[in-house]
Length: 208
Image 1: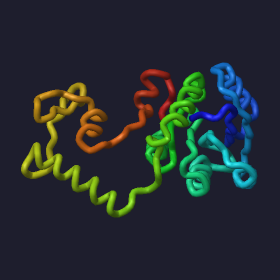
Image 2: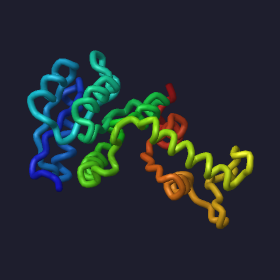
Image 3: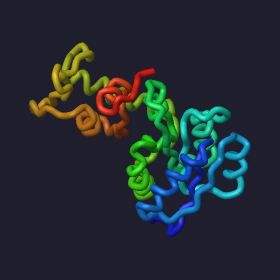
């Protein structure tokens, strides 16, 4: 159940950007207090003083990297949603989205999405990352994957995938998007970002 007033910590070095985010969230009806920090010392001090409900973070701060903020936040408050709010679109960011502790990723130029992302994170805590896999969990996932591959190919190396749309054919000859296929067979959950090539195609963002 969502609290009446949220306490949000935002790792952001540009006050105008923080103000833009605050305005967008209030426009969508969120009631909250927002603390902006831009250094590691400030971030640690804020976290020690009061546990946040949500942590937002830009990615490429001059003095405090977003990954460093993620690592600190995940150690101190692993169940608090951590959402990247940034226009930094590159291959490294796609890796970061899969890192333990990251809840979601919102572009600043699509800031109107942020309120719904926050609400979803708070209303569905069971879907949030719980931390790194244990060796036993990793082995179970590998065993499931190998068993799935063995169903389709006795060498365990091939899955039937469409050369055009990339859907995967199941044993009932139904074609499914990869995220649906792997969720149904392995229980995987996916979060959607956008790769540099698609960002350039749809938004004109130059590739780095």
